[in-house]
Structure formats: C-alpha cells, structure tokens
Length: 231
Image 1 (tube, rainbow, N blue to C red):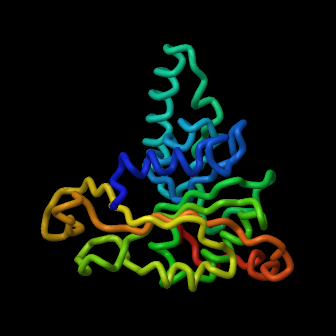
Image 2: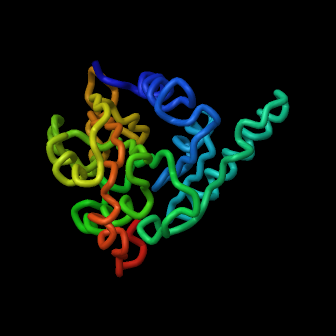
C-alpha cells in the first residue's frame, strides 16, 4: 500500500535505523540535500544519526535552526542529547565539495526531481562526488507520474526513468509507492490531492552506490555547475 507520512517514518526507521537496518549501529553520517525547513533532517537525527541539512534558501535554514533549537531544548529538559550532532548549512547544494568523511546516507526529497530537467549532469556529478562506492545509501522521494499533471505540482516521473538516469551510480535496494504530505492551501494553483491518500503520489526509493566504480565516475564527480542558485 501507499506510504503516508507516518508509514514513511516507520519504513525509514526499519530500513535506516542504526543497527536495525544497513546503517551503522553507532549512528551514521547523513546529509539531507535541499533540506528546506529541516523536518526530514530532524527526523533522521531522531534515529540517532549525525545529520546535516543543506539548502540554498536562507529563510528555510533560519527556520530549520529555530526548530532545532526548540527540539534541542526539549531534549535537554528530558535529559537527552539527541540533536547535539545536528547542523544546518546555508549553501548551494550543487556546489557542495566532496565530504571530508565518507557519507553513509544521502537524503533527497527535492533536488533530483526538481533539478533533473535543467541540471541533470550537475545532479549526477553531485551524487558521484558525495557518495562512496559500496557504502553510501541514497534515499529519494519524488513525485509519481501516476497522478494527472497539475499546475504548481511536484515534477512527476516514473520508476523506470529513475533507474535509467541514476542506475549507473546506484542500485535499487527497495522501492515503495508513497504520498507527499502536501501542506499548501488547496487552491487552483495547489498540487492536486489524491482524495483517498490525502496527498500527491510519490516514489520512495532506497538505493546504494554501486561498488568498485571509482574510476568510471571520476570525471563525472569533477563536474561543476556553472550557473549559480540552482539548488
């Protein structure tokens, strides 16, 4: 069945929770690209991972930091330090350099699906640069083309296209139909809601960087995007 917000959280916890899934039991190095207000980054940190959220939008990062401060204060009151290893960075995602320490997980709820039409080479270069062969998992949530196109909605594509465009870098570990938790007003320019599932349909895909492909993607990883303000 479809994965609404609660079931997505449960699915992620099962797939990506430290020790119960493929990620390190002591906490993983996680990067949320295009993190927006940081809701997903906070969720990943709540699973015990060292999470960093990056976004080009300064207001979004400010809101994320404010939410982090509130969550940290609540944790401290409860005697916990769950969000001590959480940070938000204001930066153009497509210009991110290779990480100093290998990433265990890249979380992408916006970048690939929103930028692939104009900046696919840059997105692929980013993913090649950020990920480590045989190690890094890539979680993608993107709009499904199973719903009719709508004005102002999320970009839509099918699972075959995802595999075709990302398959050289990543192998699919799991794929589930999901639902975007759309919170904008239901107006004429708002994404069309699927009445049964209260959201727009999406593909929720867990992938892993293919092993032993360092040389094959060395040139790709060195690519940069000339245009600014892309991600």
